[in-house]
Image 1 (cartoon, rainbow, N blue to C red):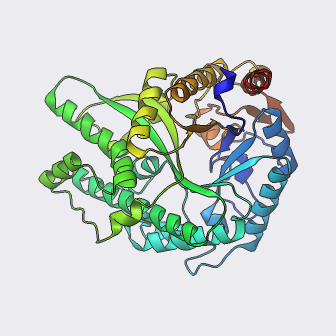
Image 2: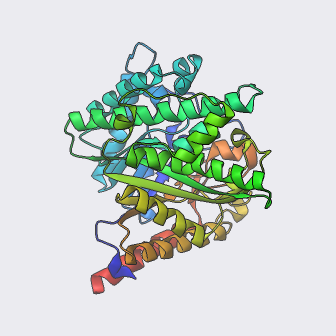
Length: 422
């Protein structure tokens, strides 16, 4: 197995925007809602934890809210300096750096202006991306414009605003998705114009929606949701079009949506790679509102066949090198006494994903890396569900490596040794 993994393969850990790495002095957006204590981690601590996990790459999400102070575009130099120091520390440890521009959180000034339902959000995001490219462009190896934009649109976007009409909700969702993709394309073009040495791509997530029954109305609705959540994004990015079937259904249902000339050309700007996360399967009925499907994390199970199908589909549609980001599988609630022995399900997920990646590589799918999500337990999730996602458990002044951290490190070491031997 070892010989099929390139020496340049990225074995990485990922951190999303709800994690301790982003609890910064200049940014109060991630105040922990629970009484769960946590340590203040410095850059050296983070680098050491990543290296101990066996990883050679780190993926994190920059904070738009922290970097840009207001709608006038004033840059927070304290935030910029923090990120520069963090990236330099990690680079000095020999780590490959991937930075994402946007995940779920946007600045207050954009929220007040109805976010990505308004087209002016595109120019605001383009400006933010240019600031990041200018300040960190020589340090970052890979850039991700949008991290799971379909989740942003349907699970954390601007649809849960009290609007009763499903038609209006869907209209806002489609408009938000279009403007997000347009912002993505604008950022890609800005990156190309600056002739930076790194690469740029997008991170997509896949959820397989299955009909709750064999009723035609459930079958049709499941197909529509699958297209809106998945193919809507891949078709626009790779071919510069939106799927005809869904556009037809929206027209028949009176959902209003129009694009401007050259929008799709911008959206389909050439990419260097695509990152993929697979969240499993969900059963839905025609009565399910897509923006009200808040329990999607329950789909995050070990599903090898679904994972392979999702990767093959995106490979056929986009024809790009691919990075795999795992789905941040939650482990059950735990306390300090059983923290280390609590995450066998995470270990199973890691093993399944790596054997699946081996199968993809053997079938000529260009996989460049695999990222574990996440490095730390996620305190936003802890406050709401008590569930854990990280390789490390953090309690007061202690950082405890779980079994999954050791397992990941051992797997990487074995593969590296095997490759060296061969």
